[in-house]
Length: 368
Ligand code: 5AD
Ligand code: SF4
Ligand code: FES
Image (cartoon, rainbow, N blue to C red):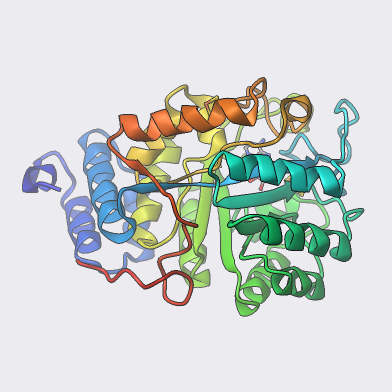
């Protein structure tokens, strides 16, 4: 970034110093993170510019695409915020057959996707062996990385999928506040989720986690703790998006997370986790028509387009007004490419593995 960005007299001196420290590659402490999360006025543009610079240096200009197959909207859990919760009787439920999942992956492969994400609610009717079969088939048929995102499972199931060739696992921690976690996700605990994330790391997955912004009862300090937890876990990816109230859930009347706080958190995440993949999330794109574009200029470097066939999409209704509900995979692919090129960025053509040691062709060294 140019020196002018940081010399604006209207930045609080401590904010200016934090941004300079981050640009020099030094880790931010909790107080600095809290302060950056409260950026306002011209500080927001200075934060954005710093995050954009760190993003460019550490992960480059390529935006990696992950094609997401939402293969089942059944869920055994009852998370208060989520439309897939078991208690939501107003949702038409579907399960896609393993054979059809493999076909959909092939269709995504033809569109150029080099990562396939297998995502569902917590639906244990897809047992360990079924998903082993799906992963093997996709890895055998396509030159693509496979990500699994099916929630909490026993360690030996994570292990079986890893051995079948799965590269990555997504398991969001949702909030680093243990009380809020258990209140919003009845019957579950943050400590267990963190334990699972550690298992996934041990098993050699590239691990994605992340959290929502604007959850009822969430504070700025707790968002700082989200970023510190992501740093402590040394995640390869962090998905950060706004909470969007859903009419079919107990949180229907609560306010949603704001675009501004989401973008500020994303930019701060880029400073805290320079080498992580940070998606411009679908939720961010769903609360603002230019949400994903904005996210890409606030530190994000991944987009996860939906590759689920149109006839299922309407029913994977986690929150209202989700983008692309009436599209087919063939529509979203050129659409995201246009978004990326309009920003002067490029579409990643390889797997988009983590640039951290051990995952990709070679570690990108910090230049700061
Ligand atoms: N608003 C935004 N994101 C949500 N998720 C679930 N419910 C909502 C909501 N109401 C996200 C969570 C979860 C994933 C399935 O979707 O982060 O991990
Ligand atoms: Fe199920 Fe995940 Fe939704 Fe919770 S957030 S109800 S576990 S799909
Ligand atoms: Fe689906 Fe734009 S990404 S239509």
